[in-house]
Amino acid sequence: MRRSLGRQFRWFWAAYAVSTFGTWLAFDAFALIAILALHAGPTEVSVLAAAGLAVGAVVAVPLGPWVEFRRKRPVMIAMDLIRFAALMSVPAAYVLGWLSFAQLLVVAVVVGAADIAFTAASGACLKSLVRSEDLLVANGRFEATTWTATALGPPLGTAAIGLMGPVTSVAANAVSFLLSAVGIRAIGGREPRPARTATPPRPGAGELLEGWRYILASPALRPLFFNTVLVSGLIMAALPLLAILMLGDLGFAPWQYGLAFGLPCIGGLIGSRLARPLLARFGQHKVMLTAGTLRACWPLGLAFVHPGPTGLFLVIAVELGLITCMGVFNPVFATYRLERLPSDRVVRTLSAWSITSKATVAVMTGVWGLLAGLTSPRIAIAIAGLLLMATSLLLPRHDRTPSERQTLA
Image (tube, rainbow, N blue to C red):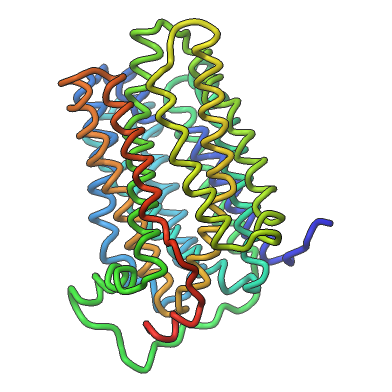
């Protein structure tokens, strides 16, 4: 039986869905614009991808303390409007003949910083809209939406670029953020101003570092922090190398490459639907530990991809296993994390988490590019796969109860 989470959550979910689809429509759009419209080389494209993540993360550092004690919905609407304006400047400049690589870089940084602030504020907003016993259901619906958008967005976006030009998907993404702002505004109701704790936040650098300080002091969150940051960094660092291996050395056609990563996204839908019944049967900690361990075991198989149909099937099978495990793990992990965050630390902690993750992806992408240059893409993918298997050692081996929250607060 489908569980209703109320009208306010439905508007929030609709806003999330439309912006997520827009983001995946524009997946790799900046790289395509840089190549097709500005004739950028591999170095410039790599700089665009890495700098947008890394500099955006640095710019976002002061945003966590700023957002923490403000109403979250106005902040989210503001971040949506900032992303809309920044992204719409790209097709406008393209039409006028003014588009430059520097503009793409600036827009990537602005959007990256706004993404982090929005995501952190949205976690606090979700916690205020949904009862604690419904958090897993809500996170499961977000997870299913994400994987649906991941499967459908990139093929539709690249088709739109082919038919209507390189900036089409960026314009669509910009409009999706405008629609997201409308959805958040439609949530309605009065959002109370967050109350400060009895002990005011530390001024200056101390307040900026409060999110990291809380994570590292928590026996429940600390291992998950290192695990999730390293897992995402290693997975994302290997993706460009797999593209080079499949499209270059092994001679797969672009449509086969797209199929290899689009079709397995159904595993995200399956995993997100399995999360709740598995949790009811085995418990939160056991599900998170098992799914977290299994998701780290699959990527090593990508090092053995070979030409032909069986090689394509291998990639699809590996990605399907990986994404299904992630579909189970992600909503359980997101719920576990929110349950252990006091209301006055949600934004700063989620900001610190997101900033670290994005910066790690940027650094690891560069490092693995150098590693592939010194060895080969296949060897670099294998090393990433072996290190991923080791990350399961960082998962918490003992269950922690929400009472820790009062101890650490």
